[in-house]
Amino acid sequence: MQRPLFLKETMKGNNLLHYKKFRLRFLRHILIFILPAFVLTACNRQIRVNEVPATVLLALEQAGDNLQELEKAIVHFQNGDDSLKLQALYFLLENMDNHYSADYYWKDRNGERVDFDEFSYPDFPSAVDAMKQLREKKGNLYKKGVIRKDLAEISEKYLIDHIDHVFRTWRASYAKDIPFKDFCEYVLPYRATIEPLQQWREAYNERYRWMGDSLRHKPLKTVLAYAGIDYSHWFTFTFGKETRDEPLPRLGPKHLLFREKGACEDVAALEVFAFRSQGIPVAYDFVPLWATSVGAHFMNTVFDADMEPVHLDVTTGAVVDHELPREPAKVIRQTYSAQPHALAILEREERIPPNFLRTKNHLDVTREYWPVRDMQMELFSGQQDTSIVYACMFSGGRWHPMWWGRADGGKTTFTDMPRGTVVMPARYENGMLLPVGHPKVNGFNHELLLEPDTLRKRTIEIHEQESYLIFRPGKRYELFYWDIEWRSLGEKTAPENGRVLQFKDVPRNALLLLVPEYSERKERPFMITDDGTRHWW
Image 1 (cartoon, rainbow, N blue to C red):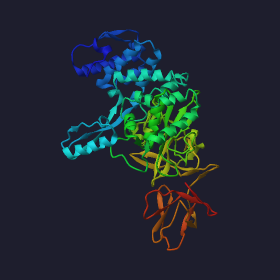
Image 2: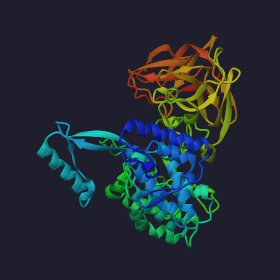
Image 3: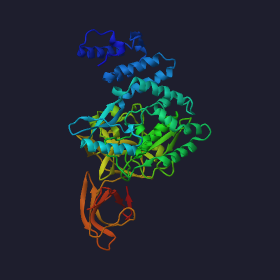
Image 4: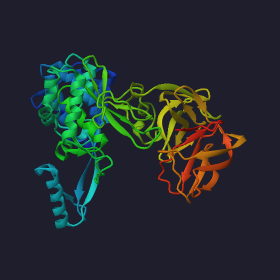
């Protein structure tokens, strides 16, 4: 491990354990005494420790062997003549612990790493052919996924080049006068999500120069429409066409230009790189789950000169200010900085379900996209006040935690919940969701608690409905109702010419689920009112 520049001259001996203890004591000393002003010199360069925010120093503690690279970047901008660039660097560093690359490499049957660089070939088909030849030569090859933390990987040169390039494009764009905090959040970041860390600004700046030029003469929404046309001319949307057989959850910016194809999440990242390359503020938004269907969705928000949001989805027909096709469980905006009210800041990771809620850098922007209301929900007795309660949505045959609230006086409140959905409150313990209240309909006009009435039962008829439910003759259909768990009400076999199934002894006011023997776990829950009307959720 290399010693940090501003400590190097204060250490004697090579005992690594003593060195680490000394560095921790030194950092605590700085924090306790509010960074007393002094300058230490090393390698003919200076770092003014008293000017470095405590939050940055804490982040640097996680840099490991990469610490000196980050310190050199600090020295560079401290000695420069642009104080905003230094503040931009501090912003990146103090929030860098939230960021990493999900990448992979190849290894042979002996576990030895096999070097292969797809970018060394003229195009992606050539790279695919080269990989086939490599497999024929070496036999079976295996993919090894890796996680690379930015603090431990990013170089001095990458940070300096990136910041210099960002400032040049930003100061030439219509967004040059936006608040600095918005610049830092939506123009400055070097990554979109968890894609591999790659040099991308120059290639994207050249590729999308037309965008910056157009914005000097045309309205933002017109240029956004152009972006949709540009995308459709050269990029292949792979959703429903192919799957990526590699442990690479997000394509890197170079992958996108090289392969010229990607899934929904990659398209949203492509637009982030495109707009930021021109100094234009843009956000990466996503629907983690459709509340009344299966799957997820990814899109963007571009901000005008007043930081007013304009929604963009180049994968749809209505590219600008598109409407969502169905009810989202939530709409989440990825940020670079940690958000103070994120659950991951307030709660231990093991007490949070393994989804976006475990990240610190996200905002709930559902109300920008869909009608919402705050839902107050009654909890079963015995729920400890202040404990975390999760708002769950049903999809793919199970409940998914999509938001959270705190238990308070036997109730909880879930903020900005999308209307037209059903929400079930639950606790998360030992990797399991435990229901702590009855589901509740968050309708467009009213709310309805779905507490099954097992004392007043009835006979119901379930009719076929085009696009929702078509019976297959001779197949079995099992009806369930929700009461802490899905409880069976029996099976029926669809008749040869029948278009209706009848079930007896069905509790009133219950959330129902009809599951065929050929289920693909796409069934939607529903309720049937006393007048026989069926409502799908």
